[in-house]
Image: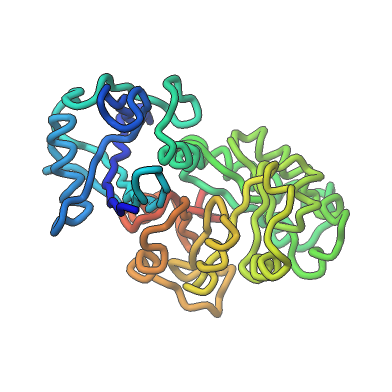
Length: 336
């Protein structure tokens, strides 16, 4: 089987759309839509190939552009095994022209109006639908363990909702409800005692496009969440138990990652996203040395799925996260 390496671009315009090209007649998969890019030639780096291909295909220049590594995906086609290096690109020079494509179209992730997508590009478009900002709850801790519905609990819950709304002013948001500390993991109906259902509703009302629950599977299912997030130790347990079950068709899966072993677990589980850190010092993990951006970039290098940086970060750190190959930033208090 022929092995092919490809560099592809996510060209972002100022309104949050990405560019797709329709493959021309006489090529593999004519009529299908794809992200622009092409084959990495012998002796060429993926970035160099990207610069060359976008010039040849679209007549644009990346001389002063911001180019950030994103996902690396592998796909089996009948004619080849393809490794695709995807890069996010902003600020190129020139107006894209369909020099090799039958047509070009600017599309918003999650609202794509053209079809069909090239098979290897479908999962990538789905990954783009994950918001760049993740707001994490800490209502139980912030309220001092106050009872759900009490004044102290409600004030902490309102602060969480305000952080979701603040982050939403900058862009799309995914909220993580993380209230399942300690013995709560063994409480099948603990989501009621922890107010998880109320926090899911509050996050949605505050503007979160997606809500995931960091807790037992039963909590995510009972509260109508969009996904289940697992701490690293719980992810190891799930893998040892044989991996996700039928619920995986209904819920997205996220996993926390702190080192290469935990990354391997996340990959083996087929997680939809990773949360990696702590990048900077954080009050949540006071005894854990921060990774720093260089180690963060090395740990997540060529990820198959979106990666959120976490640990002492805020909105201002988003460009650093993107430059390091991440997808976005996750934070508790970093959203104001």
